[in-house]
Length: 165
Image 1 (cartoon, helix red, strand yellow):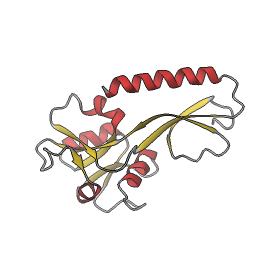
Image 2 (image 1 turned 90 degrees about the vertical axis):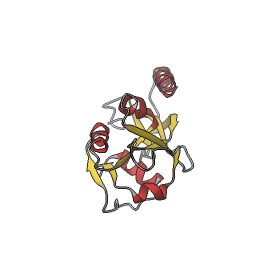
Image 3 (image 1 turned 45 degrees about the vertical axis):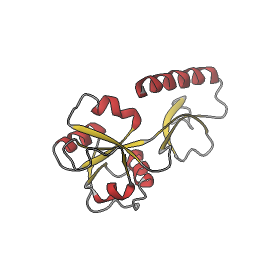
Image 4 (image 1 turned 135 degrees about the horizontal axis):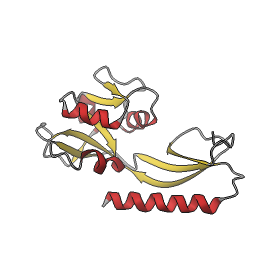
């Protein structure tokens, strides 16, 4: 839609095929492994990809870019292991963890809205070189209102920094 001029910009998680478009990265973040507090990993501050691979991992359904990011970070095969379940939203994944169906991974920007208010959940940082996910505005090279995009990028970055505190 950006290429065709239907919309001026899009916010995407990279890498994403954006041939012919400018990518203006404004945020980087890591993933966190979400488990129940009574899980055997409760005291951990850092999780390895091997531990995550051995858990019953709950992911978003095929075709979602966040699923692809997670599979890449954890070095899981392109086809998710047979011990995974899929969902259509991060909220659903959190509810599935609360229902004791498994564990999941979420990006740092989702920590506060999804788990901060739930004392039953534990967030464990993934011990893999980061950042695990990069976020960018994507625009056409001939877009004439660059100052508007720069202002939006600054607003988004400020909001994300505030939520990360």
